Length: 234
Image (tube, rainbow, N blue to C red; front, side):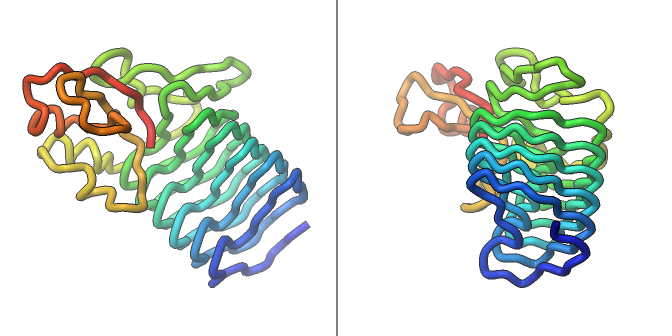
């Protein structure tokens, strides 16, 4: 049990839980660390309850490599990147957290991640509230939901809600605004943020190895080319 500590100013993350680690983190202040406030990795399964995780120079909580865990009633706010990032086969439960004021999205699920996202309040984040990559699976009150498609070519996952009980409001959708204004998304995201966005492949020239071009690439550099949706991801 790690309880009522102040964990700050680290040159890496604040707390790292890995290699099937467990334990309880409760009512800690975790802030101003160089990387994520809390890392949960490699099949670890901790409980984080009523912590404040904030002002990190990267994300708030990053859950990778089949990490699990319960995050409940935490305040995760004012972090430089995503509030909670779920990736690479991880399956945590996020319940009754407040995730706000981040410089990217509130919650992102990508790269085969999933889990349950229930009764959270996600607001005032720069890129989006809850954002899902193509093909990820989340559980909504016991019902599995798979995110597929995109705004242009199939049902719009920007409006997908992982649970009707999550409250999303005041998120600035900065990338959507940039697209409407014709700006290159790189000018918004810079080199390190990696926001969730819709990516396309140009079949006419196919000059990029990843196939990643954005809406404004289609309208400008690839105007009148044959383009198809590739995936929504970071």
